[in-house]
Amino acid sequence: MERVTHADMGNAINMLLNLFFTFAKIGAFTFGGGYAMIPLIENICVEQKQWITHAEMMDVTVIAETTPGPIAINCATYVGYKQKGILGAIAATFGVILPSFIIIYLISVCLNSFLEISWIKNAFKGIRIAVGILILDAGINMFIKMKKKVIPCAIMGCSFLAVVLISIFGLNFSSILLMFIAGVVSLVMFLIEGEPSEKGGAKQ
Amino acid sequence: MIYIELFIGFLTVGLFSFGGAYAAIPLIRDVVLSYRWLDEEALTNMIAIAESTPGPIMVNLATYVGAQKAGMLGGIIATFAVTLPAFLIILLITVILRRFLEKNKYVQAILRGLKACITGIIAATGACMILKNVVPSLYKSTPNALPMIITFILSVMYFGSRLVLKNKISPILFIAFSAVLGVVVYGI
Image 1 (tube, rainbow over the protein chains, first blue to last red):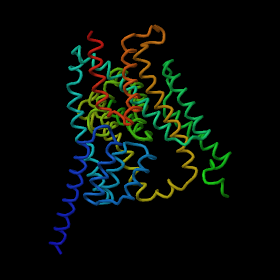
Image 2: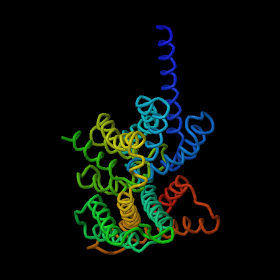
Image 3: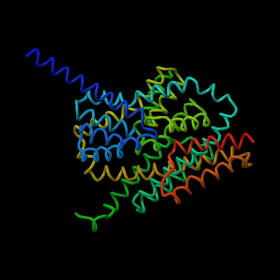
Image 4: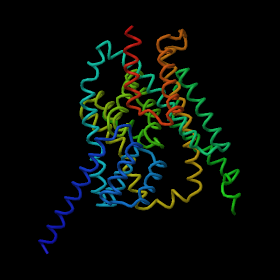
């Protein structure tokens, strides 16, 4: 009896370490944020290690997109949980965070003194504009993928305008409040108008 | 106290950033600017660094802001706070809520609104960030020539390459190019 539980514990610890190091590797080598991680997670967790199935991977991607928080965290938590419950979820999530934490911490210690150097300062003047373009492009892409219904488009337009005005006049209005209003408006419109007919009209 | 502020601030970010890192940027901006943890310029620099280093952008930003304001412990608290909601929500969903989220039409209606809203917010945030580099202040509105040149070259390159190559330039490559451009244009 004793021996069996020991072996089980050994296996469990191995699995936890495996989860931790696998996700640490994923965290250390994916540039470009959560979306860039999805193909890598799929390759390692579905194809190589067979921790989860293709269908599960699709599911978790969809869930990750409809829930808040970093997508990489959502995926790591899910895979870890499937393998080893709560402890597995913690090991995988911790693994995926640790490399970037260390890298960013080191950068944060020395960035300010770097920025004193004039050519680096100039470089960042260029970079800041590039960042604006990347973010604008992310917004445009989300708009392209969005289903072009009247209400979502109206909400989008109003939000865009609101943020531009808030930013120009330096008003104090949080995006969270804006999102809250959008959620309520969307729900109320749904209650008034019913399902935005997609599959041949509303069924009742 | 700074630790509690960091925790609450980034917990809010983690809780409301539907749609990945880009959705989080406007929220992080809100939180960071309203607590006056960083100024706009420092924050934008940091977004660029978060994009060009590995790992989830949101986590990178949380670590950086936390570490800048309150050292190692600040970094740990902010990172912990930003990941906690996603962690708990996924556990909750895999264990019980799965059906509820996918099938409930009221939840879906709210999510539709949220996604549309965040799309607008993200696009506007990007547009305003570009604008602020070109026109530094609304009241002293003389557009600067140099940032305009940079904006023009970068836009043509970024959106042009999409049309020609039918493929996006990787953000890291694009940021690297913009850095070189900044050094050249401001250096001359």
